[in-house]
Amino acid sequence: MNSKKEAYITIITFLILTVAFYILGYWLIYRMGRATPLMLSVGAATIATCLIRRKSLATLGWSWGSWNVQWQSYLIPLFITCVAYVTIWSLGLAELDSSKFLSDKKESYNLQEWGNFSLLAFHFFFIAIIGFVMAIPSILGEEIAWRGLLVPELSKVTSFTGVALVSGILWSAFHWPIIFLGLYGNGDTSIYYQLFFFTLFLTSSGTIMAYYRLKSGSVWTAVMYHGTLNIFLQKLFAPITINGENSNYYVDEFGAVLALVASFVAYFYWKKGVREFTPLSR
Image 1 (cartoon, rainbow, N blue to C red):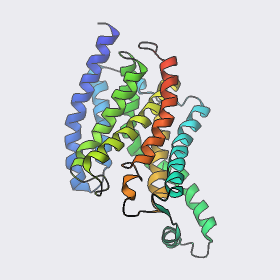
Image 2 (image 1 turned 45 degrees about the vertical axis):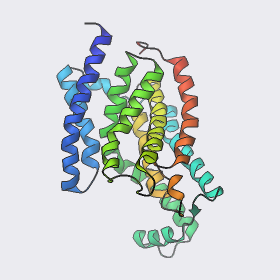
Image 3 (image 1 turned 180 degrees about the vertical axis):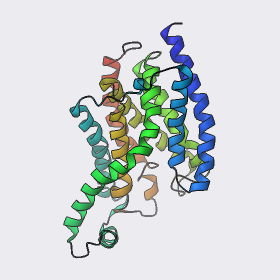
């Protein structure tokens, strides 16, 4: 059996198992009150796929690779989020106000005597290191699927454009049911608006992650990217932003600005990927 046919069978097996495990993960959300089971469900589908298809788990990309590439994967989502929120604040689309956030953190960290700048710096480094490490298990559960298994298999049968679009859209579609059911999203803009910009954002992010996965051969680049994106968006930029009447059209994963900034950066990596990767090149 040729490698393309093998890849197609592996991809189809993975998608069927992802749907099956997704149902279980969705059921566990209501029992545990957390999204972690849903994130881990796709990882379980990946391991099951490897067992059924007799693929070594080593093919998921466990090697660390270059530190330079890992640092890029860590810093790029921080750059994208920073540019997006500085744009939002500068244009008055939402307001930067860290006073309540810092007041709450002084109490939670038990650092009432610290100044605001020192506390903010402490919080930044805390989430950048401790928060990131704590998030790795659930993020890894997702990333061994989308970038560990799916991206390399897609690269055997299609161009980098196809890899980026298919993996990014499938990653987005994985979240669509919980958006439709109101478990994820902002609740203020239309569901179609949220779905469009959320999908644009994840597909753009997925394009960058696919590039680094194929470039490095390491799934850890995707873990670094995904972890940084979640941590800094959810634990820093969103909490210090005060939303106005129409702010939800622009902020967060469901607004326009973050998605557009990510798409500009993704265009650069898409061009690189098209030049550097062809089907069966890896």
